[in-house]
Length: 586
Image 1 (cartoon, rainbow, N blue to C red):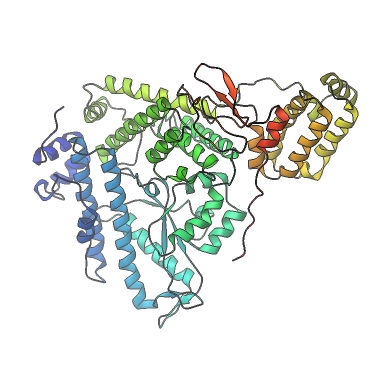
Image 2: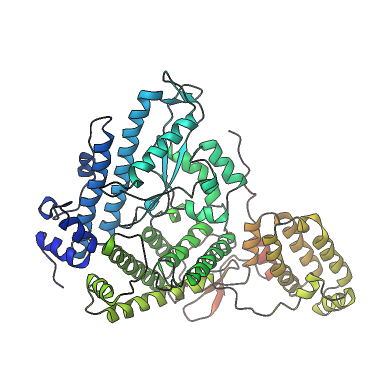
């Protein structure tokens, strides 16, 4: 299809492929000749469109919604007319969210100031609301019918300085509710953005706004693994202490060492999503279904969580920007990165065309033949079958990369030493087995193992940590047996486990010993990934190993220079990690 000129023909073409555009035009809400389609709508134009007199809330709400309508008409017409790429679409929608949020903040801040004054801390300093963008808004990659995930935070407690004084928490709660209503409420002109605040501390059961101290306390005492994933994209849109706010979140999100616990966490989250997709029979969901957008995001963000503590360049918020960093640093091969990039752009464009139909927040392929043909034409395919073939190819490529990283170990039978650790055989049999493995004092080794299993260090450990050790301890016995002095080696290895056992992320690192998840990515014992002349572009790419082994282009393996020999030494190197961060005083 040839490019269409920036004229009324663009709108007519969009009307054909989008019932939402047809409704905007036919209802008179957006006359076609009132929209300039020769270039994207600028942020300054958005700001100018939202100027209203103070106190005129009705006009302000109407202008917010009219701006969305004209912005959507411009985006859809330019995109379907091949004048805009994915980057322009997501950037424009993100800017729309940012400008409408900023305008709502200014409007209602002015109104509340007349009633209560400005919020102050104990030192008399003015306090500002910090609106934290999460998800795709945080990554500046918002889709055309997306909701926006927000968290509202303020720096310090105190009270307002007006004639009628209220405490800061009350003030900011009122302000946040006004902002949410301004964007999310349905009026005769529609809405601006659906607003989701469930990512805040304690979710729906928690307060709508929290102070910096409250947020930090939550991270240290209640923060859950999936929340680390959510905060990777966090970005402060307003306020004067955005950097300080993100510094509070950074130690929670990123660890100072290789954090393999993130791998299991994201795998478990993906499994929960997959179960829900199957329950709802949503295999046609291009976001949550197999080989969908979410799997691409998981592949990228597991690298970010595992290595972002040591390599700050990996803390890039946008999906494609982070993917570029992974390829540049050799953490994903060129072919793997290329396939994921192509699939992501294809799936996001397809997602938008599904949403263009009726301005609905959905990622499901339509069921009707007529709608499928509209989607195919919008994606520049002559027939639906051609689109389906291309979609299937991209989803297979995504699944290949996802499985290379997240698939469980291929080992299906327990290690021979599992019965020793689990005490499922008699002590006599256990001693005999240890003796056959080469332990010089198998009775003492068994007693050492039993003491640890019955100690409070193990019995009071979280169930997830115990599950890791159920896999790790038998492998340790086997690894020690391959050394010259198995008794002393195992004693030292178990000593390390005793010292790090309460830190599950450390156990996750140790559990990855000798379990390569893919090829081609070297990792020194200290955990610093680096490109070498042997780093292959073979597929599928993976996270590499913590053993110092490198997969070469010829399929062989070599050990990185400087890595220690033997499983025990590798284990020692893997667990040679910095102490856990303690919460600083404020």
